[in-house]
Length: 322
View 1 (cartoon, rainbow, N blue to C red):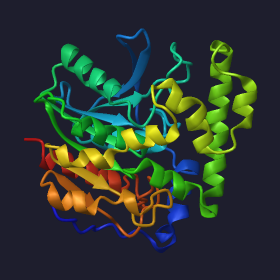
View 2: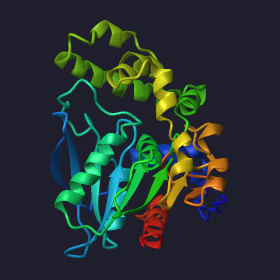
View 3: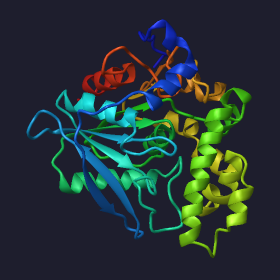
View 4: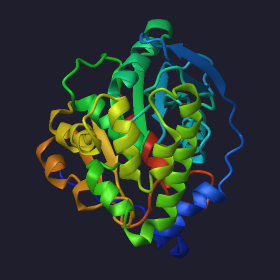
């Protein structure tokens, strides 16, 4: 589809990308939602935790699976905000906590990454084997959006119940996004990511001291250092660049066959030019690319309880459910 026009026009203050990015993380509080955790046992001996919340209908046939971004979890405000909005409109939701993101160190040396589509495949199949949903939709944020798009475009036969998808603030080209995050304007974000990732690596080192050394973790001063030391090697890639190359979702967009909305703000400071897949959207009738002028990274503030991306996600889900 051609690039679609966006109607997002936030209050003046939130036209600043950094304010849009920071405000929801620091000041938004989504409280009126109740979640119940389910643990999925994976074939390789590991586990993934889902946080379920249910819609107003007693036995909803509609489910949204929601995937968080880098170092996120099912309790991030953007996850709760979307789940709440969907619940209030009759949808059940299952918020995915990717491996090692639910508050407990996972059992295996590997954890999660931007291309771990096999885990999403396992989650969808697990849900369909136990629950009676006729329509499943998926929304991924940031890293989770890249994982989602890769899952959709890898050529697997999707279950007929999977109807459509939305990807928000997606680093479709992982190295391009990394290069953008490394710029001085993003220094604070970059340092926060590094601090959190290294803290998790130190926890992991206690359990896997034979393959991970404290001194190597301490020596990491950038995201690519961490991806060279751990992310790539733990998940079967030669190095960070091999990981970025093989897992970037942009290359998979041409093969997506279900209606898929990509919502990437033009003032998202985490996304470089290669993260706006205009050519791919124009050539694939299943891809809907919306690029608002504003929104920052997973921002999209509106002055009520529901943010713009939440409204657009529900709207897209409902429109393309058949």
